[in-house]
Length: 88
Image (cartoon, rainbow, N blue to C red; front, side):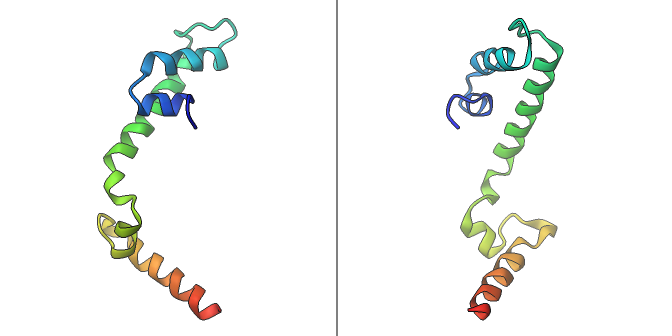
C-alpha cells in the first residue's frame, strides 16, 4: 500500500516511514519512542528478508523449483494444479 511505513522503507524513504510510525504508535509523535523504534526495526528486517529472497518469488521459480532448497515448492505447486484439474 503506497505511503505505508513498509512501502516507504522499500522505496528507501526511512525518515518518512519513521515519522508515520511515530504518528501511529506514540501519543506525542516522538520518533524516538521505544514502540516506534521496535516496529521500525522489525519492518526493516522484513523488507531486507524480502529483498534477499525476491528471486524465488516468481511464478516461474515456484513452478520449476528454482531457489526452493528443501521446501519442495515446485512439487507442491504442481500437485495443487493437478488436484484442481482432476477435481474438475
